[in-house]
Length: 185
Ligand code: IMP
Ligand code: MG
Image (cartoon, rainbow, N blue to C red; front, side, top):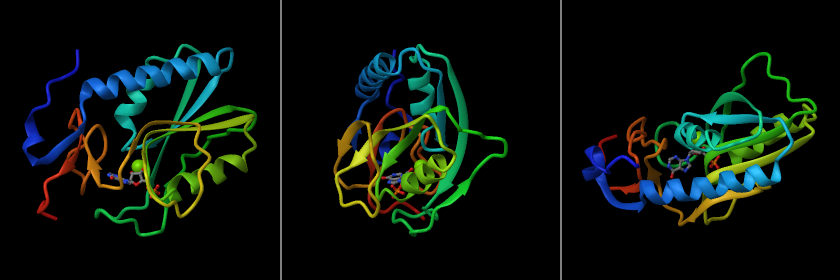
């Protein structure tokens, strides 16, 4: 059963996606991955911290053998607009050569983060690379990202919850929502 939507919910202007909607969609995404990646050993590259809950919920429904690496990348310096620069914290000892890589992130916005990381993966010559995000914003991309799976297409608004933050807060919301205007910075 999904957790109730309570707590910091009063900071939201509105709920965009409920825990139940998120859960149903992730199960559909997992079913598709189970069908299309059956027989492979999948190496997940998960972008922290935003994709934490998405990855946890999705991976527990994958039926093939899975390895996982976590990376952290930031293009945001705490505000709601991208700075254009992507810093990637790439752990030592990750070798993706000949691996079937599944790159997972919370949200595709300008495309900068995933394009930088995809490029770093591609130079390692994986057997395949599939990119999957929970949310994709309907907006012009600064960089094109070949996206195989997106859970939900959303309008170009700043969202929080289910792993996604505003200045480090709201990650623990079980739903995804739009913040009230006038949050303290
Ligand atoms: P991009 O590089 O512009 O595509 O941004 C991707 C990253 O920015 C995501 O992985 C998120 O961490 C963050 N981000 C983009 N939009 C939002 C949002 O609406 N809420 C919270 N984080 C966001
Ligand atoms: Mg992120």
